[in-house]
Length: 360
Image (cartoon, rainbow, N blue to C red; front, top):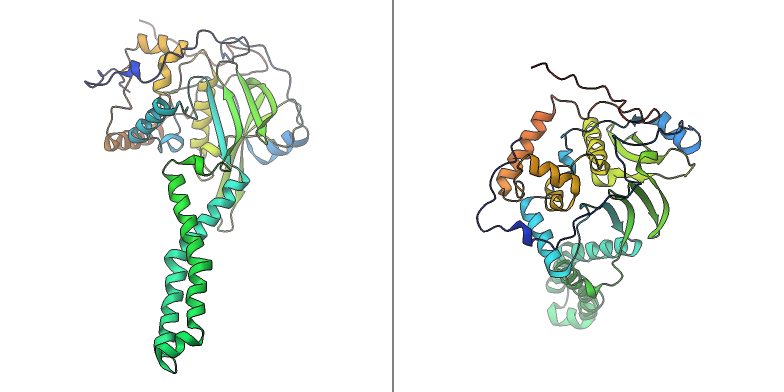
């Protein structure tokens, strides 16, 4: 993959963000070339059940393989909106040079979205149909329109307008304002944190009720792919990080970033991306969402300088060029391994099978 094109004229990538360059990784950061051998796995409780039911993805030397299904929604136009939001209000992205974070809607947010959806259905479908039947009854009823109106139809029309149409209009209008960016109108719409993976510290944190539930080093987690059949006979997958040395009843749900219906190799490619992101001996995964972050990560800065990488390789693409590139990557990756050589974390670094160098 050639990343060495020159940025398009008029683009000044250095102005996209202030200088938040990472100066130094912490001692706890994950380094596939330098780590202590891990204690033997204690397969009991939740971990044992998950490993028995699912497929264990081990640690490995990472490759350039990426899970296209996990990043295809962040297009050049979407990325431009992310950057504009950051410049206007400092709103950070869910994935940058320091952390990979996942959030979900709170309980009140889900209730609000359901109510807004029902209001829209009523305004578009139910209420117009209701008024059509009312008008038919009014015009074709006994005694004529005036008699029918005075005989109770007026109460039905006005009551429906006051108790159904007006509330639905208010709810739909409020939702449109919130959806257009006026979040201050809905202070109850607060997201809840699910997990955070920190590249600079090497730590993984799971949240419960927006508070840390547990925090452990990345290398202490086992990655397990679980599958469950649907009523239609298909398989739904979930990719979960489970702490190897604790008997927690829950794990870190990585599938929230990928979805339940990808191919098995796509989950393995995503695990490859996650390992690469957390491994400070490797540059950041070369994907759209992390392109701006590359200039603030020490390992990636050195890599990009050595390979003369265009800092705006992805962002300068058109929507069509980006879609075509991802399509081409999907095709190319079908014929290559989803990840690199296995690493035995229980023996220590340098346990991956070395690649033999060709003699000159």
